[in-house]
Length: 391
Image 1: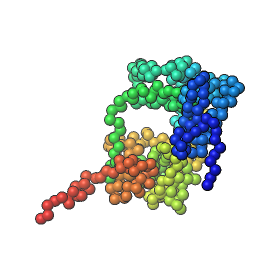
Image 2: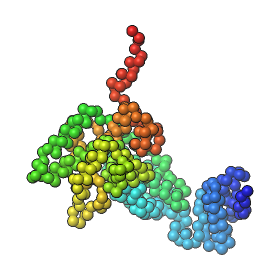
Image 3: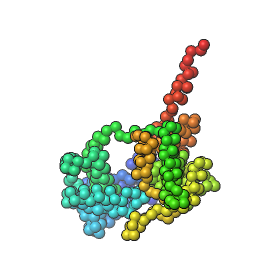
Image 4: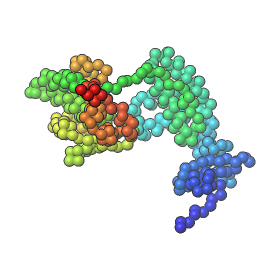
């Protein structure tokens, strides 16, 4: 029978045997209680908190919390962080800005978030974070919406950045509130409607892309012809692998395994690596891409391309050629991401089990996969014939 851990004064289980740990100290005659996690880590965190508080209480070198939401700070920590009641929005902006810069895998866009953080700091930098009200944030968003004629979606992004600044501050014990969380989101209409590509639309798209290839002479215009072939292959891999755009264009050759027929995707939507699968058509497209031997070009001599040398796709931005192709093929309301929708929908229409579709698409839950369970109208009609009267 394992020995019970030694008792530590001030550290206790909320309910005996629950393994949910709490700690308590007396500050100015008032008992301050703080809950921690479960199991050994919860107990360890509770012990560290109560021992740190006792050391500060004994030596006077620090600040004790008046409530469970306030951190226990040593004198050195106070010098760096300041009293949480006196911490400004500007300090929260600086802390979150450093975090964004240090975590490019989580914040792949290293341009727009820092711009929004800087704008928030310029407006509210001197405000005490604890005293900022939701109404002040909402009024400011109203003002910049009117003054600069910004779209509601842009205002929502600004509001989201504001909220993330305070969330990060709470994680770092620099803030106890998040006033941005109570600011309502703006109406952006019905949003984008996902749809899948019909066989006729796919045929028209491929014809346009093939015409682009045929328009370049292989002798006189070899590079332009290679680029046109590359575009067709980009479309082929997207449509038949189900990768998200960011997953596809961050793919590196070292993560392509033709023997195991998988592509290891390291930059995904939820930050967790996953596998995409290589069917014969995708394998052929990838090998043709490799034979093209194209590289991502530098923007200029002063702006070298920061992409890894072994990226699979020589182009990182497909917006211009993709939209031009859609226009020429006379296809409306269709985005690159809808290739993924088409991938999932076609698997379902072919009778593939939803759990297999979930794995192929990398969905965290089967509920996400269910959104793609569309059927062609002819399939629905054919299935409904079972209701016909027997004659």
